[in-house]
Length: 448
Ligand code: NDP
Ligand code: 2IT
Image (cartoon, rainbow, N blue to C red; front, side, top):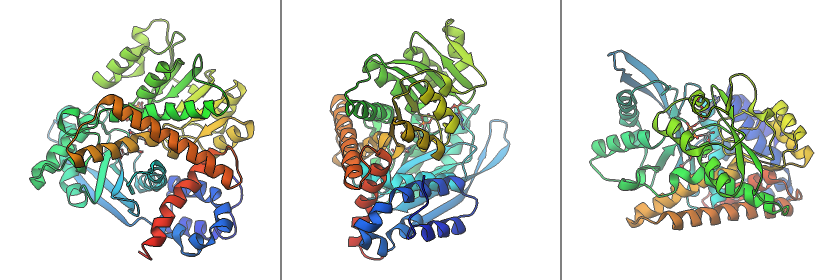
């Protein structure tokens, strides 16, 4: 990361002053501005029209109270958020995160990233994000349902097929989308399939949406490796996280001939030299909602490490798929020392700026989240298409579209990086390409 271009520094200074205490949002903005220096010279009209200043200020930010009652009758109060960041390309689109660490700065970093990610897909979706500081861990189904119903009782008035279309993220999967869709339908008395994505297959959900983010990250990794004449066949892979993105990254990496030797959750990581047993992992995480210690208890040869870094596990390919800033400079240095050749972000902003610098200086292939994890939201846009047509595509047809979209993003990143003077730099490619794809429509629509 270098000093910012003199035309971009004042913009960043203003972002810092206007959004105090929002460290993750600052980090996400800084990364994009770092990449935009060549655009200042090549496309000055976009800079002069204050497109960047407008992109950094959400169109609308909604914060609301979410009261709910636990199984013992105790009332709790959480905070709900929906940040509608940018609608130049389509209705606001982006997930909902339920995690105790959620505050406005997290939702804004995610919403800001989502603008560029969604633009990169080439599909007509704007950027937004939402969630709550609610902690789902240890809560019963009935408690989750009451929380989701209360959350939607406020959110429903802000969303809609043509307005804002939420989906899942950390702590929000098929179960939560079901409860929220049910409450939306009940309040509005409309079967508006296109209001949420990530729905169940029997009631408007797209096949392959569950798999899409993890699969897409692996397709992107495959394409990065292909650009250097390599493949995933026979590679040792480490995947952090054990949630939706991680599980399906493991599945596709295994399909493409790699051996995944480690996964993690917030309680530590497991190393399984025989390769992760995917059926067992799915059963523990998707069915039992259990912990990785349960995995090691069943697979006797696997080791569970409570304290330590998953990035110390020797691998060729690392896929951080858990959460922001989970891979720092030390983690990156350990991976590079062990000879990692490719890193792709399945999570949003999992690598710190220091980690990215270490990878880039070492010549490691590095796929930023905006590009590498765009398969989830892209398939959400395919779900919206199916809902609009009242259609349901096959798994194979949907996966094929996903694969094409990911390859399209990969090519666009490389071509843009080349055109703007940083060949092979996927960060620059993703940021500039995403920016231009949203900036041009904003120019066309006037000062709004
Ligand atoms: P899940 O809730 O399904 O899984 C999250 C996983 O990450 C869990 O294993 C969780 O462990 C772990 N994790 C979460 N927070 C922390 C933390 N603070 N420290 C350590 N581990 C943590 O979420 P997803 O798989 O859906 O999301 C993972 C990442 O991918 C997020 O960054 C999300 O924004 C991003 N993403 C998700 C998409 C999607 O379609 N779902 C699309 C694109 C990006 P534990 O259970 O112990 O908390
Ligand atoms: O970060 C993301 O792209 C998501 N959580 C998925 C968003 C979506 O609307 O499918």
